[in-house]
Every structure is written in C-alpha cells, then in structure tokens.
Image (cartoon, rainbow, N blue to C red; front, side, top):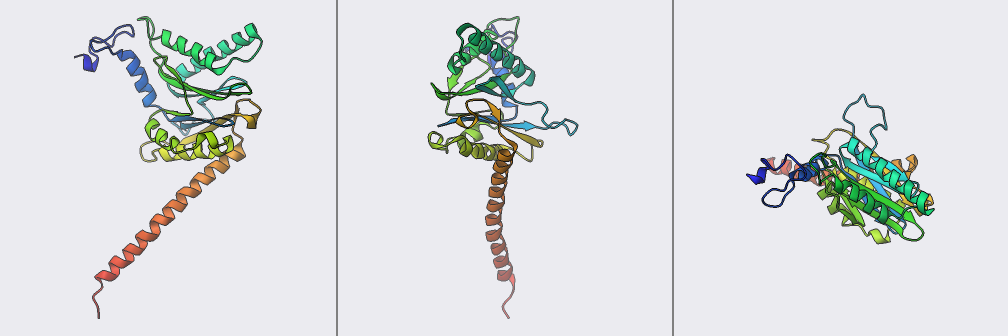
Length: 270
C-alpha cells in the first residue's frame, strides 16, 4: 500500500513505512514534467540554457522567463512550477542583499546556495506547508572563487557541479554534457554547445515550439550575470541548424544510392 502513497502522501511531515516522503517525490515529479534547463561551468564562467516552451501563440515574445538575476554576479535557471521559482528567486535576492548590507561585499555562491537550500528544506518538514515544485541552478563568477555552479532540488539538497540538467530531458542532456571538456572550454565555446544540446533533447513530435533562452556570467561579462547578446545567440542557433542539415544530407545520399541500386536490381536484364 505504501508504494502508491495511500494514506502517507497527505502531509510532507509523514514518512511511509519504507522511509519515503511522497510529497517531496510529487514535487520532483513536477520538475520532471517541466521543460529542460541546463547549466555548464567552464574555465572562465557559467552558461545557462533553457528550453522555454511556448504554450500559446497569444503569448508575447519573451514572456514567462525562466532565467533570473539574483545578484549582479549570480544568475538563476529554473525548471518546474514557475510561480514557486519566482518566489525562491525573491528569497535568494533578499539573502544576497542582506549579506551585502551586513558584511559589505557580494555573497559567495556557496553561502547563498546553502541559505536558500535551508529555506527550501524547511518546507518539507511541516504539514501546514507544501514543498516547492521546482528545481533551480545558481551560477556565479568572481576573482576569488572563479566560476561556480550549484543545483538545488525540492528536497533542499544542494550540490556543486561542472554541468547539470533539470527537467523532462535531463538524462539525455546529461549524456551530452558528459561528452564535453568543460575545464578547457570558454564561455563562448560553451554557448554553442548549450544551444546544440537544447535542440538535440527537444522532442519536436511531442513538445510544443520553444524559445531558447541563454545567459552567462564570467570574464566575458566582467563578472555580471547577463543575457547572451542576440547576435551571439543567433550565431549559436545557426551553427546548430547547420549541423542538423549537414547530418541529414549525409543520411539522404546513402539512402538515395541504396534506393537506386534496389531499383536497378529489379529491372530484368535484356
């Protein structure tokens, strides 16, 4: 009975007999049903990419963003329930602002990730609240610690990463990320790879059309989190589309030859 959550999924403060907290698992399911977001850390910064599905043609272009500024040196990419993510973005901004007011300098990303993770975890302990239905990545760059990337899930767990992915196609995206030599790449190199990965994992049959959102923080931006300039984003998309066309061309030529050979094999000799 506990395997389907019957009677044990009514509160985040209740454990099932086999040690599971179903409310937290349901929150993670909300993330798994969301569009894909990836973050990659390289030698001179961090790059975020988000597959933002366009659910209606009536939406204004650029609405429902899934990339946020937390502080001037910290960016955030989210997957899951957007309203929950916006709430956590405000919490992260408040923590960063309070740290600067108290200590006089920008908050290190590890401290910010720990503080927000503790806040997220608190919402898994009480029956009067529900867990946040989103996962998010935090990325920053400074002269002391260099590039950093953290991911926090609905349970409040926080880890540092070189590359991570969240959302419905996270496994396919992780497979592509693992092929990269991230420690040797620059942000300009990684932007093209991020665009390529988002296009690879997007399911054109099952999913709706999407907008590609890209942002970065690193030496190229002077340590500030910014949206990738339009010309660089379009160049990255063209590189990806060119690779698709090149790949399809190489597939069509052998198939065409094979088709001609099969036709000739059926023509009787005179």
